[in-house]
Length: 93
Image (cartoon, rainbow, N blue to C red; front, top):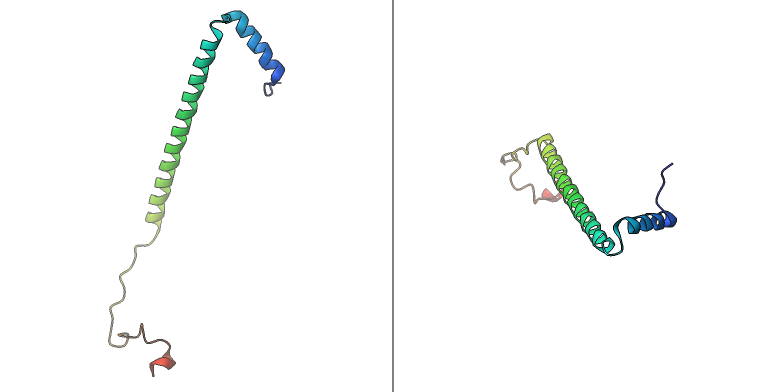
């Protein structure tokens, strides 16, 4: 029943507003509505940005808690000493 407002509907609304508020008050009223909409959009975008930041922070915390703690590297023994740079077993002989 109620769809988007088209051109003819806007003209009717403008004519009714012109009759109610008069030609001198209408530009002032338009500026006030414009400022209100701009402030609303700014507040909505700030709220969305804050929510996105908090969700990202919460997800990062959950991921950190879900990951196992990094284990300490195994101590080097006589058998493993120097093998990291030795290459394949054939190259070590």
